[in-house]
Image 1: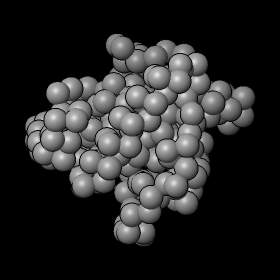
Image 2: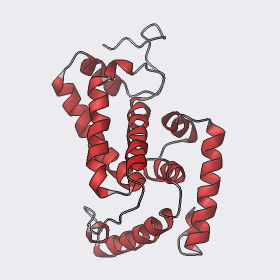
Image 3: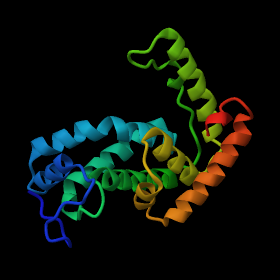
Length: 196
């Protein structure tokens, strides 16, 4: 069992206790625990980093760097947040590093042809059209604004958790969301603006 620093070994209310246990086992270099965390987070982190970085050629590198930090620095998880907040915070910082190295945007040529599982053709078409419109509009946002929108809408995280991930005050997250929504509404001009 992971003894969390600074809290006498108590688990954080609301934290996923199975994930906390996995991190504790990773501290002890348990490869199976790390593989379980990897399977849990790989799809979510891939989706987040793809939308955040917008450089398909760099997503895998940022993802691998994120998971290496989880493996090598699991002892840094202090239990003050959910495991997902800690992991997404690492991914956000790795994404920023990738963005700082490669500024120009590259379009994902395969984005339009990807198919969702278990969707009817009509649902797939509607979702694809929505994704195209939304992705185009999100390209106009800054990286920080894209991250806030992505974490809130695609990963269903609250402002407090996003603030922890981005290492900024909650009010900064609210301000970024306000400006991101305003810019998206202007870009979408009646297409998807009703649900923002």
